[in-house]
Image (cartoon, rainbow, N blue to C red; front, side, top):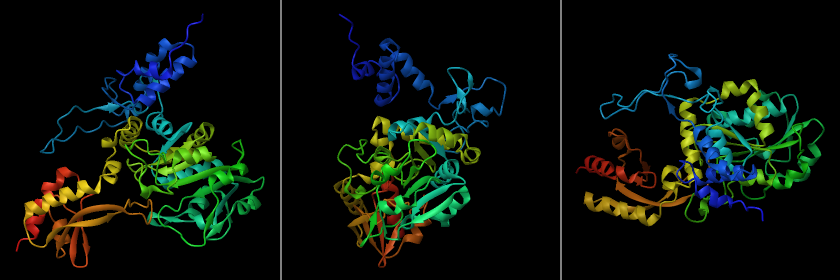
Length: 436
């Protein structure tokens, strides 16, 4: 009787001593079983771990080593500001397994692709750069079909029409400001159409007599080859998965209707683009994720080098992506803050009020917002302090500066974005600025 291979999950659990999220250990186990050699799972896992971006000791004698990130990173500062740790390089573009030049895109990008359910991903320096690279590499000299209702302006005055003009593609506007249906797109698609572009209205909300064709509804217009038409969806804020598996409970109500990378790709998008510093909760960056052949095409374009991020961004993105794969909520500060129960915030606020013991400072219900051009119009119930008088200027001048809101002649200190470790600093500042 032939020997039955172990289950993928059972084999992955034997690799728990390898410092990787369980999801990546599952990938290693699955690859080993698929190759008919379950015993190679450990080698697969260790190869995945070795491919991560990590500090290295540079004993080559080359001070500005391109493959090791060029200039070394400064040591972490101590309390007085002087460095205390060793000066380190990194394997930014160095393959530790082969000893040859590697790719800066294989670290954080591969992890983000895994977290988003994409074949591959590419990291650039911001969200606008991600759209620009995608349409330039895939549609320059050809047509890009986009709804008039999605010709949005993003932060800093950058407009989608300007981005498309810079790409060399010809923009074909369809529909109206408030209603664009599948028929509008279908009528505009020709042999010269390279991309159907969907742009999430991430920094405003349109209500009333509106209609917008979904990626799933447009998927039958998409072609299977790079010649198109391809559906490219800019989902904006960087929500990786609408099911939020990194949270202990169901998705928060305020996320309703926010597009997510995994579901958008599953619905038929060839590529999605999104920001790294919004709902993703990482550093400022832009991400392209989707079909491997299209990602490779974007990566080969000359513009990709001009838009690539540096080592510090990639290190921070890798940390963020690993936290998602480990489902480590504590390592995702945005999500930890956004999902704090209001009761916890009220309890902290009451402690502050009790400690301050001062008239004119009370516990108050607040309404936090995600901000940053994401989930417009949605509020997160919160709590904090209401202080008589406008003390915002005095709080800004404090050390460390405290940024609060003025409302109807009072000061509102919403605690949702305040680390509990900073409650004593807030208490000290409020005690000083509200002296009778």
